[in-house]
Amino acid sequence: MRTYGRIALNPLTPDVLTWVEVDTDANGYNDYVWLTTLIQCFKLNLGESPFWGDWGIPAKPSVVQQVFPDYYVALMQQRFAQYFAALIIAKIPGSVPTYQVNATTHQGAKFQMTVAT
Image (cartoon, rainbow, N blue to C red):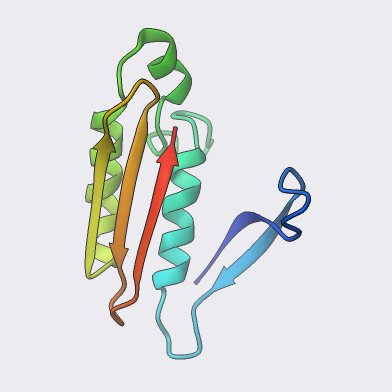
């Protein structure tokens, strides 16, 4: 499997992003592929993809209407949970829609990230 994600290669220029390919690792695990895909789905606006129109979150309408996209985040958690040993996405209280993502891979590696939509 393979997917693509954008990262800042130079910490001095965080606005300069480069696309990188993420593949199945040498042991045949796809955990990093699915983690990258999950992150990309957080960045994807609902209806933005011509192939996966029901994936992503309505971030702009959520900000305009002042309604957190909890339903769509829960839907993402449900869709991606099968690819991890554990996946918990929880809302962080505040004025900006922000979520705490905790993922545990099948090998036991733990990832924790904060996502502001």
